[in-house]
Length: 229
Image 1: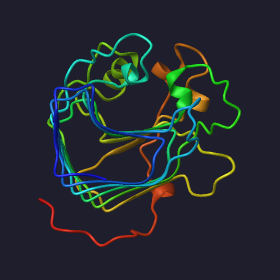
Image 2 (image 1 turned 30 degrees about the vertical axis):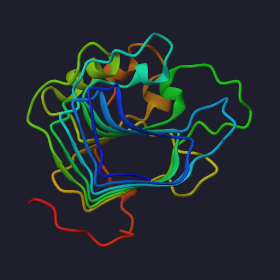
Image 3 (image 1 turned 120 degrees about the horizontal axis):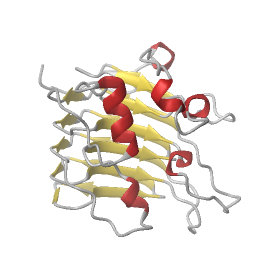
């Protein structure tokens, strides 16, 4: 349980890694590279985190340059990220204020996007059963971080209006429920569909990503609390 904390001037403001039954709420994360990270990583004793709830947090202005040492997994975090979910399952993100993170409000990505080798046969690199609902998003027009390739790609595709919720589209073939998005204020969405759009180095720059979130509409599992209009 992480609550009533302030996290700032870090690469990872708050990180939940390979954890079961974690709750992160009533925190303020700001001036980090990434505000709140939920990661499942290979080659660890605990193989699968689950039942992670991130709620009622203020996640803002996480635009710090990434100063992680080479080879560190958090070195992959794009500066300007509010929330990042990497290869995690059964995660609920709700009733948060996510604002002024210049690159990504919330990113949902598989381990494949890291382009790191995987030798752990018990590791699941996909995200699944991810629920994002009743959050308030706000991002002034502006370019994402251009020092990372994904930032350059988003800038080419969307200019100064990067979507708030970005999904890499890697659905776990063994899981029915992949990503559910519901009742988020001021939230734009895009599906990068990396399985089909990233076949060659130049493919993403000529591909059309999908902004249609219809397939990700699911019933909201919790009641909303009061958030800004």
